[in-house]
Image (cartoon, rainbow, N blue to C red; front, top):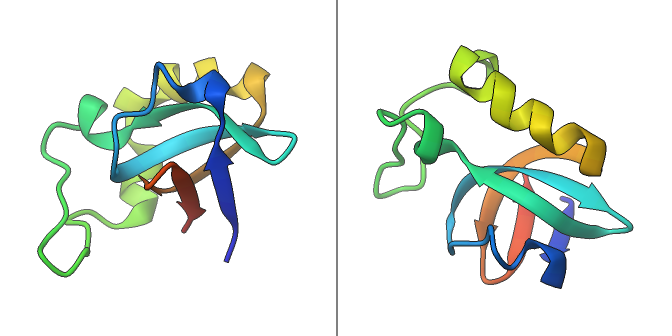
Length: 89
């Protein structure tokens, strides 16, 4: 399991726990977007299971522009943000 610290550079983007896409550089999250900000119907049940499969989420056209904006900032990962950490799924 890969876990990255949410670095100070990502402070203005970090909103607590949630499924997200992150840009990682030098072992720290430098930017991230939350899935639910762009796919409003995306949610997670009480057991932490998303209502959409990962391939459907990453292929959703509503994520193309926001994810492309992350690419110049670092390596891109999909995972869960929380407790100032990012866990890659």
